[in-house]
Amino acid sequence: MTTECEGKASWPELVGVYGETAAATIKRENPYVDRAVLVPEGSAVTADWRCNRVFIWINKAGYVYEIPTIG
Image 1 (cartoon, one colour):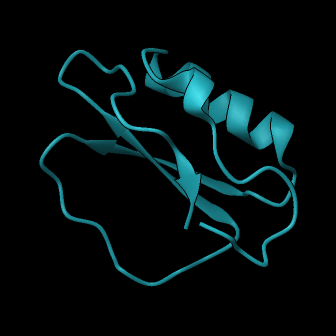
Image 2: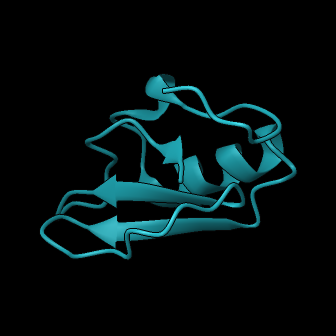
């Protein structure tokens, strides 16, 4: 997906990483992201698009199971 957002837009290398660690990595690698939101498996999220937000989908153990992307 192509976006008009600045900075890195996806983090496939974070799948399997602990959620809190992934959030810190995303904020460090893209200073435009000020909301790295941990989302437990099965939760619903808002559908609005934001360049400053990344949803980090985590399983019950707290590990990332889907590629985090801006949105």
